[in-house]
Picture 1 (cartoon, rainbow, N blue to C red):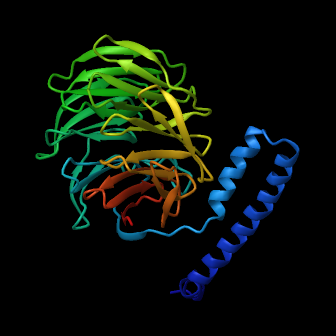
Picture 2 (spheres, rainbow, N blue to C red):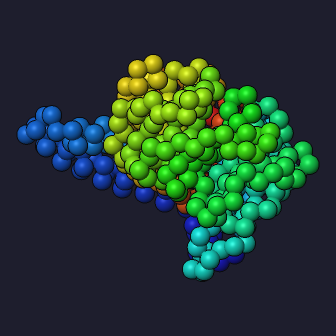
Picture 3 (cartoon, one colour):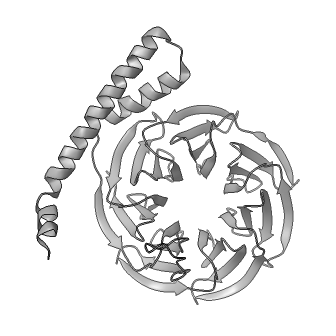
Length: 368
């Protein structure tokens, strides 16, 4: 081991502490500037948002414990899903640019992990381009995956076999979701459209138009009739899937929507956005309940615990954060990824979190 590596290892805690001090000093200076602006313009929205963000950064926060790190992917981990029993995880991979600056085609797989055992127990390989999204059926041992090349594949995970291909197109698929009864699949992609599919036959049931930008995220409502979609056009739209009709947009957000989640009781929805914030909506009236601030870069993925009390977010700032859904306060940060965190989900009875990132790892975290 090189001497520099020994020094880095031995003094990692000290270096991290110094970096934290420097960051806090910078936040303190920024807070002083924002306070001066607010004295002159008390209602300045940008300054008020900046103040809320900076105050969140200045408050001491606990750090969650990394329980395991799953390695094996040869390219970025772009998406994650967990089986209904919460015991197995699926991670989809593939990168655009390798470390050497060349196209990285070494890994276009979906890997299946035994979460508690920390081992890879299966691998699904059929996509010919980057795997961008994956969703697990709530009722059957099935997984659906989408790719940058435009294919949607339904898999039997018990056999590791392809059941059927739902779509073969040239426009990328960005998001997928199973209906609560597992009978339908909703997809969204680069062509600004949503498509509803029959999981049993692979037939397209309807096509939904309305977004003016790529569809980045989709989520069913608990009744299985309604759905939400988020887009880079800065909107979250609500749909009636039986009628194939748009019901309207939720209030806000102010930036591109990168991820969506809906609570199991259907009371609220959560989005991760390109302005580094999370938005939380009351689904009874569609009003924006609050914005959760603290991330210093875009929020790529969000998840809601089954009881709806806590939420997770993953960001390009290399952190995963746990929040209190009722107060909007940050509970803890999960630090360990060395590059952008692309995806996050709850696991193992919501006592743990799983995250995947551009550092090619899937990490398991014990939550407080």
